[in-house]
Image (tube, rainbow, N blue to C red; front, side):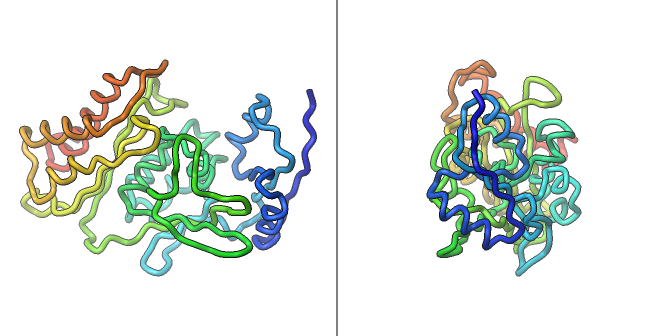
Length: 289
């Protein structure tokens, strides 16, 4: 059955926010369209109105701004994967963006859409967690920034209220320029694969191998992306050897809350988290490439 809806395509942010306010939560936002259009075609979503924000060029791009890397929500995964700034200050995010879908999807799909979809398997979200990213949320009435970890409320759920739009992301520049980050993902095939499990980590490593700062986030192993806080505590101030790596990855696996589904069992996901985190730590210790 044909579904009719009102279509808006403003070219100014204030117009877009005004349309969202008038829509009172019944207007869906179209960015890259790689998720929304599919769901509309399947009949899973029947919006009263669609707000196409594709003409809002002010919401695109990557730049340095106030000691942060600012990323517009309309920036595509292809653009992020190819950004020198992102590689330099948030390599995990560049790696994650390069692992999203197929080349065709990466040219259309936006990081803002990836965030708002709030999938625990999203490739961009674990890197944003460990890079301490913040999300800018705007409406007609106000503008606010909050930590990306506080943006999600559950699978498919965010703190966005009626009339609110994600209008920016920022990754603070690390206080220590030795900070490095990585992202590892396991899928059931090499391309177009949703993560069965994923791990992102960021750390500052001393010349003797000591980790004096580390953050670990895990994807697809809970209702939302999860931090491995106990594993972080175990590793901080230590130079990991095989014994400590083994302890840390077991602790990280215990932090997971995975489910059994068609892509993998809960047991399998815990094993994957352990293997992926071990790979990152061994690369940092010079034991793997």
